[in-house]
Amino acid sequence: MRWLPRSLRSRITVAVAVLVTVVVALAGLVIVARIDHRDRTDVDRQLAARVEKGDQDAEKLLDQRGHPDAGQGGDDYGGLLAGSQSLVRLISGGKVVAQHGETPTAPLPPPARDGYRTVDTGGQTWRSLTRPLDTGGYRLEVLQDIDPIERRLADNTAIVAAVTLFAALATAGGVWLLTRIILQPLERLRTGALAISADTAGPQLPAAERPQEVADLSRALNGMLDQLRTSMESTRRFTADAGHELRTPLTSIGVTLETLQRNPGLPTAQRARALEAMSAEHRRITALLTGLQTLARGDAHALPERSRVVVGELLDTAVARAARRHPATTYRLSADVPAPVHVDGWPVGLRLAVDNLLDNAALHGRPGGDVEVRLTGDAGTVRIGVGDDGPGIPAGQRHAMTERFTRGARTRSPGSGLGLALVDQQAHLHHGTLHLGVSRGGGLEATLALPAAEGEEPHGQPTQD
Image (cartoon, rainbow, N blue to C red; front, top):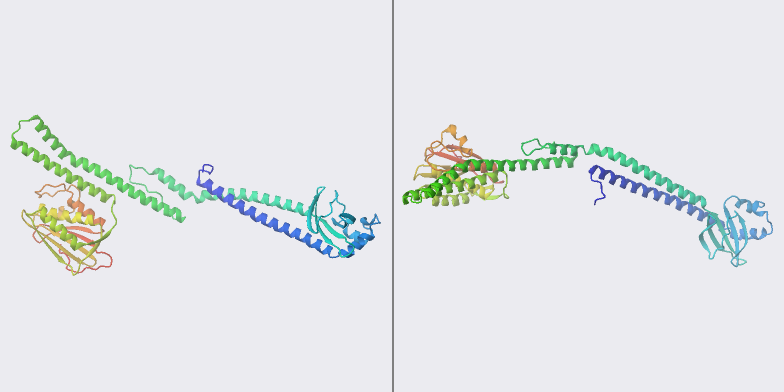
């Protein structure tokens, strides 16, 4: 609707002014109509009272037909009607045979039927009541000039119009000033939005407490901005990490390809080693991109709906598949909980965390060694512990190992350095923690502690760090 004002302030002002105008106008017109109805009802009542004296009035009118001065107040009846803007007429055979009272400015036609009627003639408006008499075949008509009532109606209507116009103007001016105060929180939100830049982490939109609708809008917009900043930071971090980490393997693949192109007669053994090196770099790139993509989704909180996960079943499946991926490693799973325990979370994310712990234990443990997997719980917490028999990680370096692209100084296996970072991220997304300690075999034990599902209190032996 293009005819509506563009600004909210103008729309509110116009809407309230129109509403007040309609209400005041309707209320005024109702009052005017009631007053006019009362006045006209009073006239009709007076006419009816006069008609009740019909027989007496008829005799007086017949007696005074021959006295021309009677209409000037010479007798009692004429004196009563003179100056009262009233008129009494005696009708016979459709003609006026006698009349007394106010002289109309123009001839009044005789009534065609009995009852009430309104007659306009000569610029005057008369209200008339006609009644048949019991004797003589006459009809008596009593009339009252209602021009004063018509003028009162016009005056009252004009007053209502003036009051309505004044109310509309006063309301528009008052609302225009008040909306400036009321809409100040929105103006502050607009100013704050203009100050926000995509290149900075702040500031947020100003928090409003009143009115409630603006406060809710402020909180919703700040929440949206936080999500957008988180998503943007995740995208930037993904881009930076991918660019930094992919440079080396891509360079290595490029060098190998250039070597093969320049040496078409390269011995078969050397060519096989070059192709194997490129395949290894390709696998590294694929694993790196998969890990970075998973981290980016977690950073952006691009998560599915939470569901209840049976931890024991998840561990059984994960350990069985890890044993197939690392046939030289022996996995031992033990559960020290009296009944199946559950956590509320994302099955894919939990499975990713457990798979990374199992793979890390196989890759960084002793070749052909053992990996111990334990499920314990106490005081509303479910713990998944994975321990290997490798060289472990010194206590001073354990916290740094949860950072991205961090690899231990003692590690002998290839990797992207994202495994424990992925586990730590999933722990935080599930409101849990990741603790790195010493396993029973002297290697690293990673313990993933998660809150049990609501209503569950698992009991068992706590994990010893």
